[in-house]
Length: 137
Image 1 (cartoon, rainbow, N blue to C red):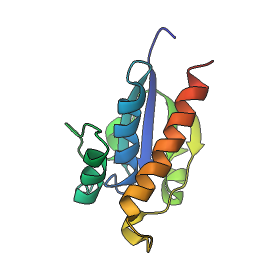
Image 2: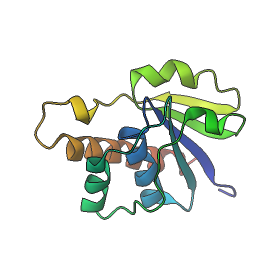
Image 3: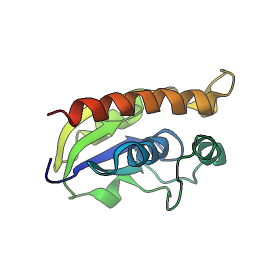
């Protein structure tokens, strides 16, 4: 694989799930992928997101909330949405390659025990599967 694959993770606010996915893909395979994240609107990253990433040893340096419009016109091999609300918006991005829909429950509204760590592990499992499939092509 000569060039890195550019991946944009999109969620409603870019404060939890998409930030987790960006950091996890960078952590898992930065030699094959460039990871970015954005929200339909910018928000402050939830501190529990950063705590969950730190807990498993994922670097959070440089992570900040960005809007979807900041990436307008930039080419991506994959645009991956992580919530239902962002799926429709991602389809309007003309420079995107394949659009993938991964839907994860918002841990901020979850009633599960340790919802941020649970969501982090779910996303990490999906990222590892994505990396395995896409680097074998």
